[in-house]
Length: 70
Image (cartoon, rainbow, N blue to C red; front, side, top):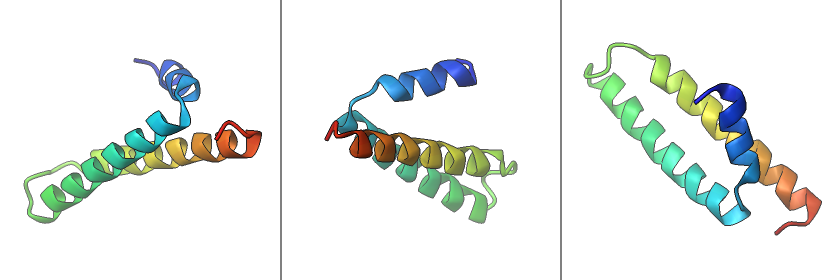
């Protein structure tokens, strides 16, 4: 899935789905941080991607809340 398709998919989701995605992304980031700290994850790239994904989801949540879709 390209970046544009991923962003479009996030934009089309409802507020409840975005909150669920946020919960899952935070859990995944936590697991990757734990794996990185215990040296089971050699490449720190999933940490950067996870943080960006969380920020992107939070941006869409904020946009929807301000638009009154809540």
